[in-house]
Length: 288
Image 1: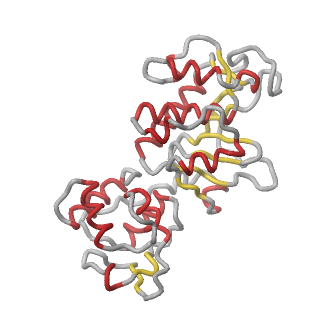
Image 2: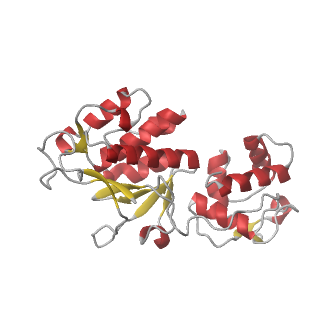
Image 3: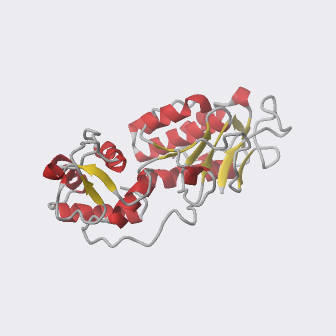
């Protein structure tokens, strides 16, 4: 299901009465392919599952509150009231206001940032348009997913995923797709193909279960088992670059001692095996 803020009570884009006059201006709707030649162009996914879950909660609460409607001329009134709400929850809004697809999405992301204490999200502009949303949210930490499996159905989507057609429209996904979570990983501290595939799924990299182009002299570790591919190209792996971004280290795609130490520090554990096990537990929850 999607949370969509799409048009006013006349089917137009401006000049209507504040609030949702029909129950359909800002509503929960089934997943659909955007009706343009390109369809949805990307999915924007935050790497922290708690953030994704809260984005989904806030987006559904906004769609369920009929005091929030659609009007491009009054598009920031929703954010103004959401910002003033005690816990930045759309359910707390008790006077009519308006948004459009992009300002409502930006408002939801900002509110999630305020609620989670994440400055990069809280700093997102409430005036964003779809044209600038991809870069703005990528700069705020979202992964940009462009693989066809994310764009042609909801099977691989997670709660809080943002579906974007850069020139026209944006919506927020509310539920986990049927193929978004497979068999739970065993948190055994051994990093093999299943762990890599789940990491790729969560971070939005191609899910083939392989960690490509690692340099054995610095990357090898007994805890890294199936799916690790070693050579001397120093090209690195896309999924490792995504993980390095989360860890705040150089994004060269090569996994080595600094990355292992940073992973241990992230989870406050003493051994690499314990860090891998904790990562597996979090991957089972859809986060890292």
